[in-house]
Each structure stands twice: as C-alpha cells, then as structure tokens.
Length: 177
Figure (cartoon, helix red, strand yellow):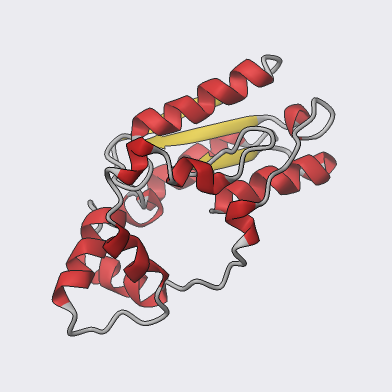
C-alpha cells in the first residue's frame, strides 16, 4: 500500500516532492481508499485470499512449500528463487490498517501539483496492468494538467528485485535535475 502513502504525503506536503514515482502501486483517486482497488472484482479474481493472508503473516515457515510457492508466484514471478525466498522472509504487516482504509481528498494545489511517473509492470499478478492503467487514466482525468508519465516494464510485481538496474535507470531519468 505504498502508493497510498505516497499519494497522501504528496497531497499534504507537495513542496517536498520533485516527483512522485509509483511502481506497480495503487495510486488512489480522491476520496477512494486503496483497499477499494484491492477488493475490486478484477483483483479479487486474482488474489487468492489464502495468498494474501500468508503475505500478511509475520513468519512464513521455511517448510511451508505451498505457501512459499504461492507467494513467489504472486509477488515475485520473475525473481530468482534465492532472492524471492529472502524477500518472503522480510514480509510483514507493520503498516496500520488505516493506510489501506482511509481516504485523501486530492487537490490541484496538493497532489495535483506534483509531477508523477507510473512504472507499470506488464506481468503483475498483484495489481494487473489493466488496473494500473485504470489508475493512471483516472488520475489524468481528474488532474489533466501535467499528465502521468508512464514507463512500462516487462516484469512482474517486484521489478526492484528482478530488474533493479532498469528500475534505477527509470527513477534517475524521472527526477528533474
């Protein structure tokens, strides 16, 4: 739910942001909780409640082959096995529920004034690329001045692990000098 945090922070303190960069993240529309996207029919059909529940656990047992396989397939589809397993070990549910359930009223002077880039992940099993494109279209419709710059990655949900050099390159190019 990092996209919800970024959206809220940019709304509250737009002067602190040179660029808002969303990477396979929810970019919630005004007064819409991020969880509304996660509960949409398009995502509900993909995200098995079992997988989500396991992702929110603090400790996925190393011997739980089924759970680890589901998490790898869902969150780390193109990440090498050792890196995916290390990432699974770091999954936690430390964020308050309000990150997903609260809403933010977006304004032209707040979030709308921040340049934004959205990095889509074409093979995402968590936030399908169609949902990512819908988030972008909704943002651009609500804030047509300075539309979202979109960069597509041929990756699954965790490109910061599967193609980190490419992600770094995109981020460096997105930030104004």
